[in-house]
Length: 131
Image 1 (tube, one colour):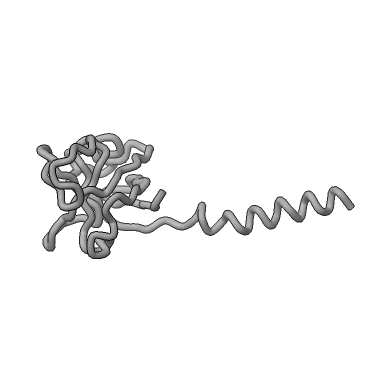
Image 2: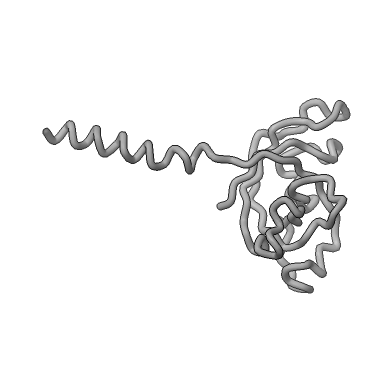
């Protein structure tokens, strides 16, 4: 009976955690260059370089300010750099708004973009999850 309960516990834990682990939003990322202040969320506060600006798709009327996202490059959006991804992810904090006309779902700082992709790509496909 003990073994059955252990197996049941593991199965239930996997089912509960599966949606959290498997769910990722898809979009695109671009990057912007310094200076990073002032920002729409924090004025002249220096938030470091692992930051991003949210497009209207995730801005949520300033509700995105302070949210942290894990961002991973999933591929190229054009033929310029066919394999831009470095294979890792980066966690960024939303500190700014990328106004209408923004070319990505998330506009990463130059440093955050370079951590996950070749900057020569300019724009990449991404998966992102709130952390």
